[in-house]
Image 1: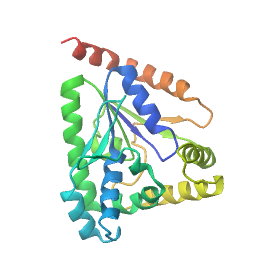
Image 2: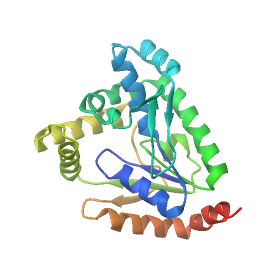
Image 3: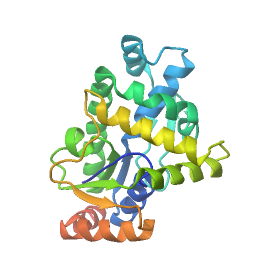
Image 4: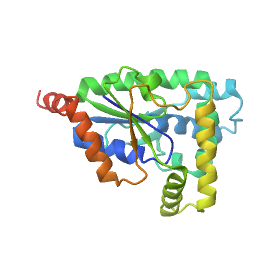
Length: 234
């Protein structure tokens, strides 16, 4: 298992999916769980700061998170919300929802269940998030903490938004990145921070391909390539 943590804009999603493909492993975007619950909260017209109501919605919401790196489909009920959970309204609200301790407990339990299932099926899984190496899977054999400067991450976020047809300026993106960093790192439950034994990788000056090569070499040295290959041939 690879636990991949870090703040927004470091390339976690792209890196995690491509690394999982390279390793022949499953993939889990833990953040997508918080995003789909946030979408449910907004659609219910609930106040994201109402912890009791948000926790109730989180417990009632029926959703699925795909674990195939080439098609990580996210559904809310029977609706494909893979794109909808990446909207600006979700970006602005998800930190408040994910800071609620009872919501985190519900979703962390589900994340651990999915990890166990995927490991049994494929022999390996790459899990991305903000508390994977510290809380969700502290025994993961390889923990990575991706970093990049706030300016670089804001530029990436702005480019992603523009490509998706969402209005965004570099200044807006930087403000959003700084706000998200503060909220994620200062929350009382499972704050964003690297695990003590995590390998830090600064992606500011690296291409995605360079990051993948570096992480695949780390995984290979931990025997993970062999584990997934052996599982696939059984």
